[in-house]
Amino acid sequence: MVPETIIADLLLLLSMMILLAKFLEETMSYKGYPPILGDILAGIILGPSILGILDKDVIEEFGLIKWIGIISLLFMAGLETRFETFIRSIKQSFLVALGGIVASFTLGYVGGLLIGFSSSESLFLGAILTATSVGLTVKTLADIGALGTRLSTVILGAAVLDDVGGLLVLGITTAIVVSGSTRIIDLAITASIAIVFYIAVVVSLHRTSRTIWRGITRIAHLEDTNIALLLALTLVIAWASVKVNLSLVVGAYAVGLAFSEISGIDRIVRRFSLIPNIFASIFFVISAATIDIKPYILDLQNLYIMAYIVGLSIIGKVLGCGIAARISGFDWRRALFIGFGMMPRAEVALIIASIGLAYKTVSLTVFAGVILMIYVTSLSTPITLSILWRNIKGRK
Image (cartoon, rainbow, N blue to C red; front, side, top):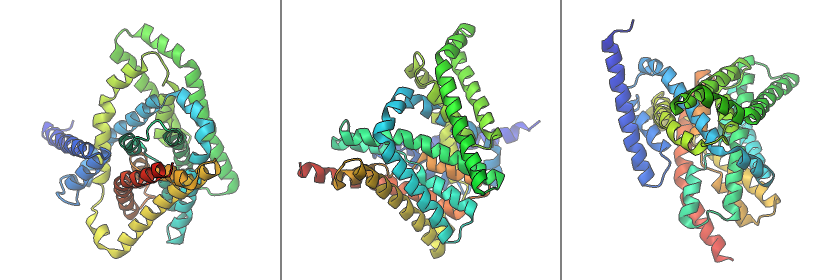
């Protein structure tokens, strides 16, 4: 049995993480930036980079809480996507999403190999760069008066597909790293397993979601029990994902997407959101506290690699999505607007980097580069979109 004194110390550290993370989240949100930047900053402050309160042993103690946070976050992201919106956006935004995923993954993988990364680390770098986070983009579109336009519709539709594609890339990458195989036939089998598993889970659960939910509500009359049973199902599917060499977050998102149209979903999301709002913050705080960023910022070689990763992340989305948008019929100004709208990275990129770190595949230098990438893309997107939108409106 763990002594109460140790439990008390851990609870104190947990309270510090929550308080500092939420304070900095509020600060970032007030300034118009994604709250995740506050979580990362809290991890940098509490970790070895500044105060050193969260050391390696403490981080290991919070391992389970950290993963519960990220599973619940991906589950809720699936619930908020809406299956109908997902299907409706496929034809309109598939090309833009595909262009961004292919360009970003290719640049990450090839770019990693060119500077001496192993094949496994290059695969994870490619997977990291595929992830888009458009929360900041949505707020910027609203602020500049572009929300509701055709441009914003394409960006948001592509973002839905981009999330799914990014998770599939993560699943395939994880399976390759776990199996250690890179033969073409093995890669084809791995990709097939990932795609079939994902589609089977989403389609089968979506078709039966209303029946399952009615059955749950008949068994349990308390709403919290209903939600708890749904979360339990999510944990089972996450477990099954790992058993087929995929990441557990792939399964969590799939369950959320499948149940996104059940009766009273908005109420369920509101009640459930408390879990990821608290525990997902802990995930990002602990992830950022994993490394001491000072050596990477002060060392020119590491700083070069970090800047290199940031450059690849911007080029991949801006050119990949931008060229795809141009092919689909937009002029170059609007195509670039879409490309820059798909540029921000946040939660998913950090999740994939953390998984790579857990597999001892992603180096601490790359992880530091991901943190820098999140800050650079998040801070520059509002400025860039505002300038491009003024230019577009001025030429109408």
